[in-house]
Image (cartoon, rainbow, N blue to C red; front, side, top):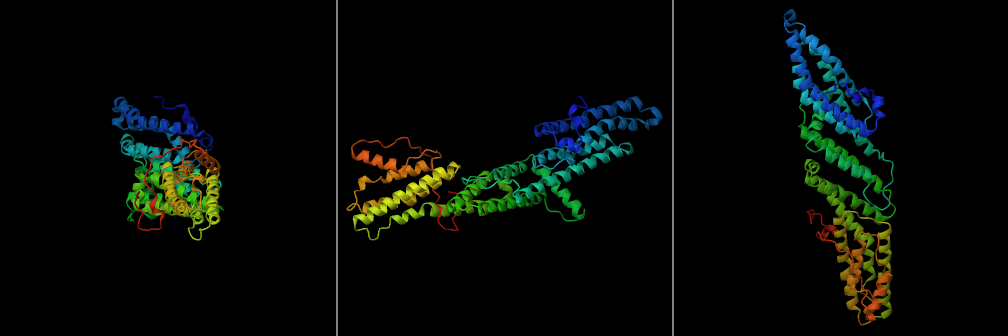
Amino acid sequence: MKLNPDYLRTYKPGEIDQMEWENLETSITLWTQHFELAVQNVFVSEKTLCNQVLGNIMDGMVWQECFVKIADKIMAVFFRFGEGVARSNKEPQKLFKLLDMFNSLENLKTEFSDVFEGEAGADICMRFRELEKLLIHASSKVYWEFGLQIEGNQDGLPPPQDGTVPKLVRYAINYLKYLTTDNYNEPMAQVLRTKQIWKAGVHIACKPKDNLLKDAVSNVMEALHRNIESKRSSYKDKVLYHVFTMNTYWYIYMRTRNTELGKLLGESYMRKNYKVVAEEAAYLYEKQAWGGLVGFLDKQDNSEEGDSKGKIEAFLKGFEEVAQRHTSRYSIPEADLREQIKEATVKLLIPAYSEFLDMFSSVLDVNSYPSPDMIEALIGQIFSGNDRTSSMGSMRRETKEQLEGRNSVSSDIEQMSGRGSFSRFQRNGSNTSDA
């Protein structure tokens, strides 16, 4: 083992701040491995050797001091690198490497004290404890500053123009999911508990570590919620407002479901704050985007051909306008959410359209209009995730060709696997279970 490798030559906080993240990440990983190897193997062997060679001199009073002087020069190099990392800038991605370093020291604490025992090792043990304190402070500060950055909307970006999930939301959820995995939830909880003891005193009744972590994660989730609310309030397009809301809250719920993060926060918390909000936004989206079309199919006072024809023409024109807006301005990336929205739209429009055609077949040439199956196929295209969608004009031409005996209806419409309808678009507060 090389106890003074090149990466340890960069140890000042300013120099560490200038390092590429990949290089710094590699250096910290090597530091952790080398530090453990030095304490558990190299210094144990060195201590045994010093005892064998110098143990009989002055009744064994000098060998420990000689050993510590030899080890101190090597450990100083490790300590200064660790201290430099702890004092460097507090970017969010550093949290996990800081926790790796802290966890390594925690695991080595007993062995380190055994290797550097007695009065001779007091100074080097004190520096070990000081490094651990620095890492606790740094880890805590990185985490809380991360929450403040989310709160302050410091990504500096406007909400996505197509209503998709902001990058900050994706980053924050993945960040918290990683933090609550088995590798990091215990070290982070230990950091939070230690900081609480330092702040309030040793004799206070501390919360369990799991509760401390839950509170900390909940605080960041609440900051993220406020960030989302701030972003969505800037939309002028009411439909886009609801698209963004359902996309974002559905993403958070589905990405945390059945994960350690979701288990920590609790299913009831996630349902109330994310799933129900997404469903409410989906209901309002349906009402805002598609609900107006049903009004064109009013069955009152349609005894004259002109009245019924005008209404169905208005419906078809409105349908095409809504379809164009969806393919050019709105995006629903999640396949399962698209499928449920598609099914809800079909249930909203197709029965009303079919009933209108049936009721006024005596005054309308219904064969000159797209069939309900054609409208349903077009809805399927709109929510297929593809940019290419047939227009109402092309659908009308297909209808005309059918009347002329040429079956030119497209057979390559993408079909998606169903996952249940979004029946909870209806305002029913008790229906919050999964479809």
